[in-house]
Image (cartoon, rainbow, N blue to C red; front, side):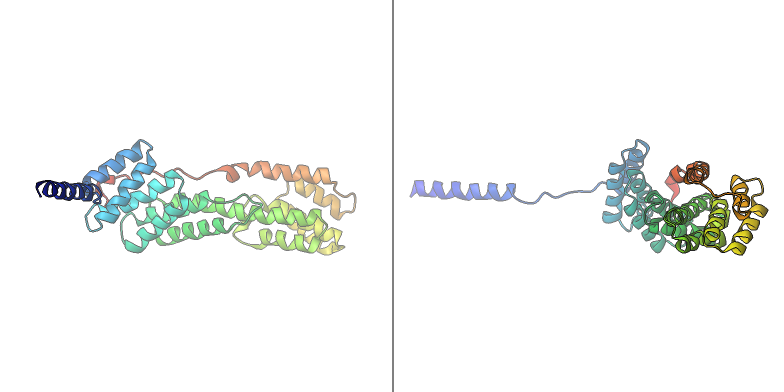
Length: 290
């Protein structure tokens, strides 16, 4: 009996110890102010994942604290710097939805556009991201024309429009080289007649390409008209000299000469195709974002 008693006691004690060791760990969160300062420190030291973790913890565990709004706007920046552009867009849109009258909401609009811009493909691919960036930058300029970020948005908007016009040119060149002149004219016409594209560096080539396409189609009057417009706007350009030769029937243009003319356009617009946007910064008063 005595041995049985001790055996039962030992088994009960073993079960208790086992149960305690398998119990879930109780996690305690640091105060939101501490988490926020740790997040800022992580940002300043380029530890962006740690910053994301801190700001997300504030947002999830302390949503009604005065630090939550600060964490939400810094989360946009942290995700952007980490290269998580889709998350940065999502964070920005959420901030805009939750705080439409916040004094730094224009910053959220700017970061939304910039994150879209960073995902833009080259001009040979779909430009839906470019159009999303255009929408975001335009909305910022329209809603907050006097904000600190409106002038930056205008510059970025110009680069986006250039990229869309460049794609029209890439496709138009493809059709022109394949002697599909009607399809080529339709593309070049977009660059020539769309007011948005008329300030891009591709208008001169687009006008010349329409001179060439219409001339090869036997549309001599249209060809002369486009040459006249080209000369009026770019009288000293290399394209106009060749256009005059074409409409006067004093010679055609070789593939190598056309490639050389195009190369000059591409080299002139190279900055816009490689520019990654103005670097975003932390808000000027991070300790006073309410």
